[in-house]
Image (tube, rainbow, N blue to C red):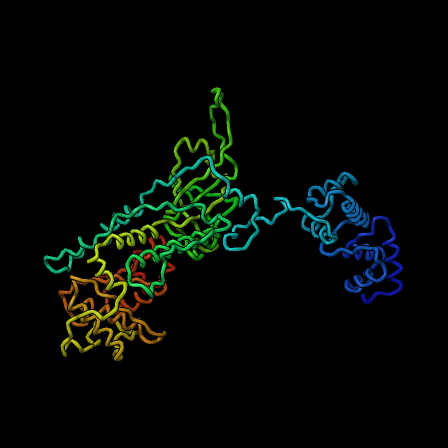
Amino acid sequence: MGGFNAASREKLTAILDEPGNGIILCSVLRQMYSRRHGKSPCSKKALRNAIANNWPGVTLGYGGRYNGPSDEYAVRINSIVCLLNGHESGSFTIDEVRMFYQRKYHVPIPIRDDSLMAILRSVNISITPTPRDLKPLSDTSILRDKYVPQYLKDLNRHPTALQWNVNKQRNMDQVITLLAKDFIPSVPCTCAPGINVHEMYTPNAISPITPNLRFALQTSILDISPSKVVDLDETDIVKEYTNSFRHTVKLEYEERMRLYEHYSLYAHQIKAMTNKTAKILIPGIMDARPSLSIADIVLLRPLQPIMVPQYDYHRNLRITPNTLEIQSRIVDMVRGRRDEPDSIVISWELDIGQKELLKDDHFMRQYNIRFVPEESFPQICNTALGWLDKLSDIEQKNIKNLLFPVVAPMVKPLDYEQMTVDMSCLAGDFRNSDVLKPLNEQQASFLRMIRARTLDPAFQSIRPACILTGPAGTGKTKTLIAAIAEVLGLLKKDKTNKNRVLLCAPSHAAADVLTERLTAILRRDEIFRMYNSSRPSVTVPGKILPFTVQMPGSD
């Protein structure tokens, strides 16, 4: 198959002179030529150039394939194209095009919808997509940029006539109280006799916050910062600090709501678990960031309205459709094994009347599902900031030493023996560990600061925090492990030491590294690594598993 020659021109002229071939597809033209003459006329590029130079009145379309049994269907397709070009309406749906063809030839078009749409668009015929023509939503659309029909998105913005709250689980405060009795040991108070610091700094009761469940659905959000928001590095006034921090907490919570909106599901079904719970299958949601959390709000809207019997003014019973939104909470999250999707377990405690109205005993309904972050984080932060605002002038002066430190705290100097830093006295399994290696001067200086504060605790005032900074590889983790050993009395082998350390980290990876380092100096009953109870044991590092509540082999 080479270039375009005189023989090819004559054969193409015979085809193009036939009625209805003023608009023809490149693929159709090549097939008609091949079936009549046993070979293609020329390459696609040469054919395009030949049509443009020799037949300026012919429109050559591209994109789309024709698999009809004979040239007759090719002629019919082109005649439909001519018919649509002369129609008053400037836009058509695939169903309308098929109807035109069926009425004229009394047989269906032997081409799939996607191919037919490509054919018509290639000759500049406007095609209006219908819900049936849109790309179907796959199970993995939660983590992919799939097209979602606009009518499904609009359903979430419509006002609702009915709102059900099917979350009747215990709140998190009650859960923490119950767990505290079994897992948290009672630690005696270490305050000096006669000083009741706990009464002085008792926070206020948490004031409830009602989250705006429709915030992430707003198309335009006007963000106006309060007039009293200031640069925290340029102020030493507690009121300005709390105002700025409160605004920051608000912005962070709103941004989390926007990110959660990316996890929305459309026309999704839920699965039954128990009479009080249901589950939502979402592939890959356990690895999504920001991650969903237990107690997050789940909003479910049935695609079909709920038929509710109501009496009108004349006491006549009428059945009226009502839009419904069901509010639930996440009670558990389970990572899928192998090729199974992840599961989000939600509370689903419907009463008898709600079950009769919903009519979804077999869980066949489809829902639009949205997620909203739970409100405990801004509640706790705003409660703490409100507590700061209500402190007296004397108490705020003590708080300033923590928030806006100016001078180093006063502590008793260490004597010569206390200045000695010896890591060799630690006992434990130090294979593949650098714990016993001597500290350099800067690391030892930080350890002496921790030792001085531990030996001379402050009960009348609040000291500023000790901050250990440095580039990667400078021994920050090693120094922190040594400081923990000092606070617990391991460097002096103090058997009367009753101190406890709560160690927090910004990620699970960082917490795992610290736990693995601490296993060299602490026994199994002296360290506890807290994970989510539903986390599978196979995802926990083997060296850390004995220090958790995860059972080996659990899923």
